[in-house]
Image (tube, rainbow, N blue to C red):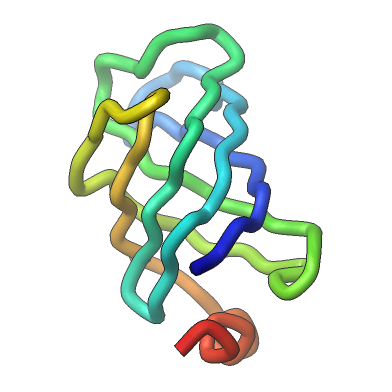
Length: 101
């Protein structure tokens, strides 16, 4: 089980709109993707245009960790949760994930 706070940039694809900021907690992670819980979007709503996420963690064991990804599903539990499939992640950041395997 993982419990790592992350910052999110919600980046519109092919739109002139600016990115939005959000925060969440990674509760499950693999080399392919992650499950984010307690997603808190600064503006309080999910953009209607297509977007991707830039996920950044600064606390151990994912210090200076970063990945890009697409939302593959949303869930409601005690808050908003999102399943993310990674589309871009460095070899070094994949190695940091392997501690959870």
